[in-house]
Image (cartoon, rainbow, N blue to C red):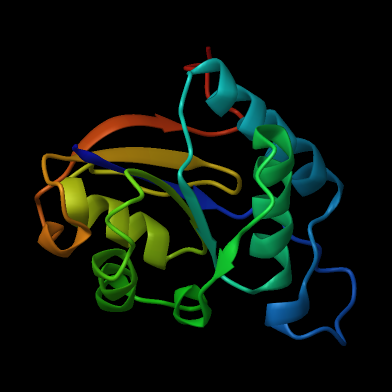
Length: 165
């Protein structure tokens, strides 16, 4: 079966505490509102999730938990290499995904996610906003086959988008 990868950028983070490391920044009020809203939009689209993979950074983890809650999923796989990843590191994560999972949602960060989306499907996205998501479809049965230019963008949605369902 064809593979589908949904890239979800974490929700808006809180910069209020200057003593927190970048890794430990939580979601702010808007991030806590946008993440469940985007999860609901995804449900309305009828998207099925087989596997959730997330950066372990607090804001990505929190965003993933909102999606897991909306989908009644009790397991999120945390992958250290997604944090501060470039396109090469992100492709390595995707190429190592379990082939039993056809619909994978990955939660992470910019600029890596925007660059990665553009590289996979030549999407020409300037910026994936916080809580934004890009669905990319691949004509393969194996995640190992995914490489530059092999995907096709299905949709690009974000909180302030007029494209919502």
